[in-house]
Amino acid sequence: MITKNTKRFFVFSILIIFFLLCALLLYINFHQQMSFPVQGATKRDYDQNSFGAPRVGHKHKGVDIFAPKGTPVLSLTRGFVLFTGVLKLGGNVVLILGPDFRMYYYAHLDKIEAQTFEIIDSKEQIGTVGKTGNARTTPPHLHFSISKINPFSSKVYYDPVPILNEILKAK
Ligand SMILES: [Zn+2]
Picture 1 (cartoon, rainbow, N blue to C red):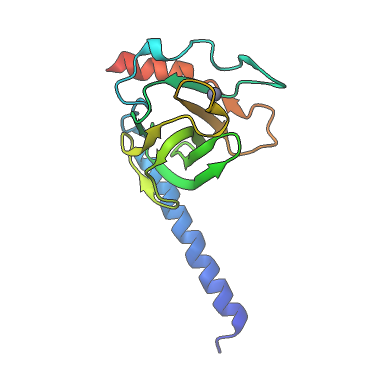
Picture 2: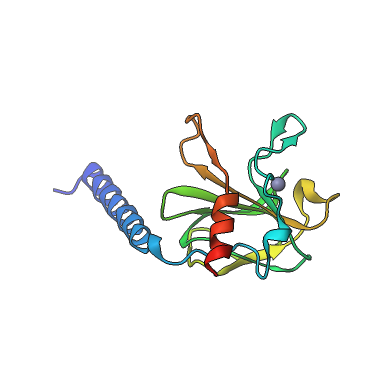
């Protein structure tokens, strides 16, 4: 006999299996290439000390990569788009869960060109550089950060600068 509970359990199991498969898929693809998140950018376009730089009331949690408005923003990793939308500070943002289970956050976008809940490839365009959110008074740039999923961990944000340097070196 199929009760309401068995039905629920069935749906729940399917969902779990689906997410495990997604996780596996992402994991398998982790060693694919990583791509620099701003098309055509060089080492001169970001400050080596951008991460941890003092800001009003806190330390800078990511890196700012400066580029003309409209420059394509590319996904650094392959990943799963968790959120696209408008935030007060970030403006137009895209949040991607990477294959390493870290969160990749792209902010101040002029245009968002990714869909929530889609799987995106490394080097795929997810938006354009802009100055939305609290970047209205600064030159257009991409605010990019990498964080752990667990917000209770002591170390939540990673310094993206060494990773960016590595990608440019490998080019
Ligand atoms: Zn920033």
